[in-house]
Amino acid sequence: MKRVDEAVSKLGFPREQRKPTAHLTIARVKRIGSLEALKELFSSLADVEIGEMMVDHIRIKKSTLTPKGPIYETLAHIELGEMEV
Image (cartoon, rainbow, N blue to C red; front, side):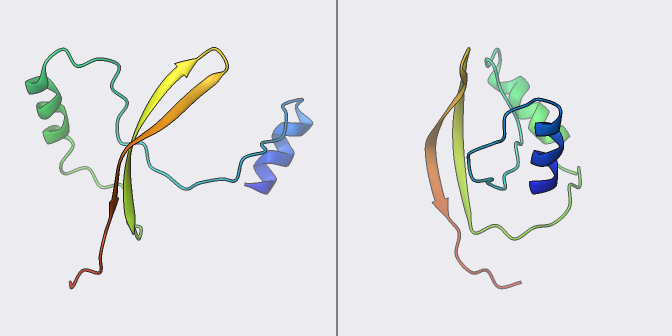
């Protein structure tokens, strides 16, 4: 991240002040026209492989886009326990 920050600052962009947080955006839903269509979309992605990573919690976030940038709100926080494989 440091190298990316240095490279973009040389292009005139301000340096990022926030601490980076690893995350994965699974979907961004602007509006739900049909719950059934949303279910079908997620079902169609069931076999898509995106790699592996260790996850100890899940946060469901809502982002509200504003002219000053997005505002994030945590809707749910789920702690995951140890799993036997």
